[in-house]
Image (cartoon, rainbow, N blue to C red; front, top):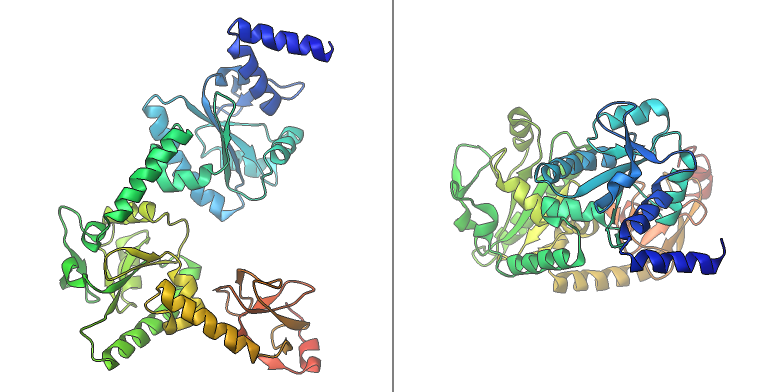
Amino acid sequence: MDLDDNARNLVQALTNGDAEKISTSRFSSLLASKDRDYLLSSTAQDDQVKISDLEGKVIGLYFSANWYPPCRNFNKVLIGVYEQLKSNGSNFEIVFVSSDEDLSAFNSYRESMPWLSIPFSDLETKKALNRKFEVEGIPYLIILQPDGSTLHDGVELIYRYGIEAFPFTEEKLEELRREERMKHESQTLTNLLTNPGRDYLLDQTMTRKVPVDSLIGKTIGLYFSAQWCFPCAKFTPKLISIYQKIKQSLEGKGGGVEDFEIVFVSNDRDQSSFDSYYGTMPWLALPFGDPIIRTLAKYFDVQGIPCLIIIGPDGKTVTKQGRNLINLYQENAYPFTDAKLESLEKEMEEEAKRLPRSNYHAGHRHELTLVSEGNGGGPFICCDCDEQGSGWAYQCLGCGYEVHPRCMRAVDPATAASVTTH
């Protein structure tokens, strides 16, 4: 069959309203192989579902793997959304595209999934899908619409909007964005932190109820964290120290004009973990298991912890990057406003002019070069303190090792050469 024959057949299909054949062919070309026209069902190990049965549905291609914790975390969220959509009769299906290392891991992971899967053995189809959709990281969720359009940010949309994102059309997403803008414009501390049955927060003793209204006019940090989270365990002591320094600084100014408070938004798994973890903190908290916790995580699109959201004295969001700003500027980040950060960035630029252009670090054997976002630097994780950084850094141009300038522990080249780990 030549190109003209193909064109005539396509026109004929359109003329006859034969959209089903065109769409089925599209899904088959994506998901089938020369000896397979089916997908694996979730109901039993060897049950099969014809790819043609996907006709007319909204399809999510789900690239994921059992070995990667962010995938397992997202998988739980996606299962909840999928089951709600299916119970509502929504015309939606998911197809799992595995990046697992072996068949045993694939089967174990698939047992938790209520949707369809490409067989683990079909390596060529999985490779072709990864190439076609330029998948560079997992979890990754691509939405395929019946009209042929695609949407690549399915993971973000599920985290952000949940079931409300369906059917993932541009019209629906614009409606959600418009509603979100309206909510943020009318945001107040009271409507963020209270619900019809509770207008208070817990103090550190967990015996006194602090009215949410008493925080109005203060700069507030909403601290999403949990005892089981290793990065949280490292960041919390640092945040406690910074919190106390900010409070002391404000008290030294006489108080009354400015104030700062933090509210713990727990992701702990049980009351005892919450009690133990919160017992180390000097600030306020939402009660464990309060329904507003899930609402806040969704509202602020919290996809990982620890996370520090800063709310200004007017009740509006100042920044979602509180953790990063604490790591960069410590207590000097307060009150986290754009004007303050602009001032700190200028100070950092001036300080960088006085730093040596290169040096050797006690934790690395190669010479490190001072870089900025404009000459090879950018956002990074400090290899010394394991916290986020941006702007200036000392970087190994050979292997990418980076540290904050403040974490630099200068040594002579001979001492650095004896370092055996990176």
